[in-house]
Length: 369
Image 1: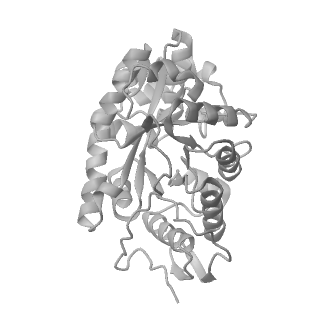
Image 2: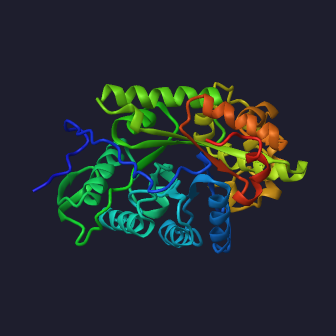
């Protein structure tokens, strides 16, 4: 009988699994892009956006889960059947919004549907979300043990477990395709989460609005933790998320970059964490949250306002923050900025804010990877 050990026990360190492609690497294999960035009321454009990403030669198409129109299982299945070579990743979903068996079943079904092109990205989120859903806040122990449980299930093992992630007498997938389990990546910002990714996950997904220097420091922490745990550091991928706005008008750029920044920095504690990671003085966050549109707001601003409505609010943020932690300007300038992030140690970039069909001119300024 196989047991998933609680996080406080001596941890096992399984080697990350990254399915080897059965085809030539895409032209821009180290670049990926989100489909359906932000709020949407119609998920169908994701199919065309994913096809555009594959046509451009991007390595991965990413899906962020949002209850209502962006269920990652449904979207990943549809995209997987509408494409043939590009990887399909979640950035992100969560362990506890689905039963561990359900999540493992979804992951392995997507692996079978895509021929091994699926990447499972998960995150921690914030305590207010879990309280609103009636679920316990996420802890490092739950994250580590959940990754172990899901990975063992994806390998076809039987799991008996009693610990922080729940109590399970006997879990096993009834049917399993003869295909490797997908890699599991953790979205992380703070030092403890980064170290957790290095010890227990197959990769880390870094948050938008980090500078290249912050990406470098974050990647170093992940890799140091992996080495300390006796893992193969070269098999653990660092995904850096970069908001891009190539060749846009001033108003469009403000909506894509600045307004999106508001939705992150306005969240109490979360905004401070981003500022800290970048080495910025967090004082401007008080002015941001005191803006008439945000004063007294509970929850995320993008649940209430459109990006256009948040553009005005964004002007309270220091221009330096937006200029140094995103890629905006001409297509050539954005391409150069992406090279800065890759040079900082990112294995792959997740392009955010601009949908794939808008990225062609920028990619023309980059060498094939």
